Length: 131
Image 1 (cartoon, rainbow, N blue to C red):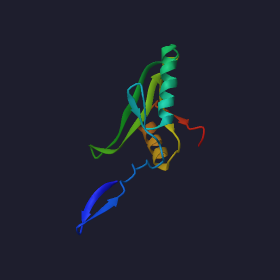
Image 2 (image 1 turned 60 degrees about the horizontal axis):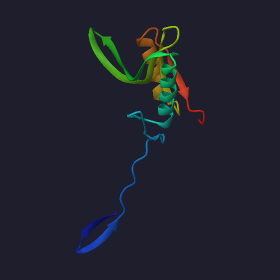
Image 3 (image 1 turned 120 degrees about the vertical axis):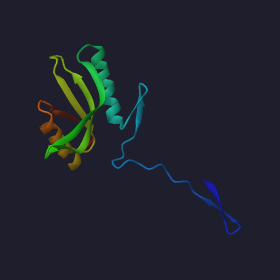
Image 4 (image 1 turned 90 degrees about the horizontal axis):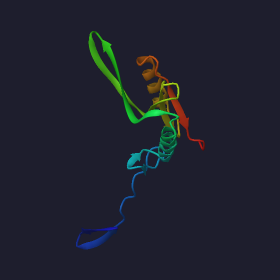
């Protein structure tokens, strides 16, 4: 609560609760990194463990994919997609992953756009098993 003075009287006004995310994801810190959800943090733990066992390599987080097209000789930015993880599998091929509790129409559209603009990129979705 905080106190507000109004018309020579004191009112007790409750503080606002912290705003929850649109899809109720809870930011989670692990290994000094703040992840957007518990699912993303849990996936990072799995991938980090796999990297320590030399099953994967070159693990990266939060990879930008600018979505830019050229119109009349000028670059036009459409959007930016940020993948959760990028790593090399045991064959040495790059893997792009995104953790999702809910697959939205916007995500589906961005996924198609990135895969069209970046030949050879396939975004793997790691779904929340509870969803």
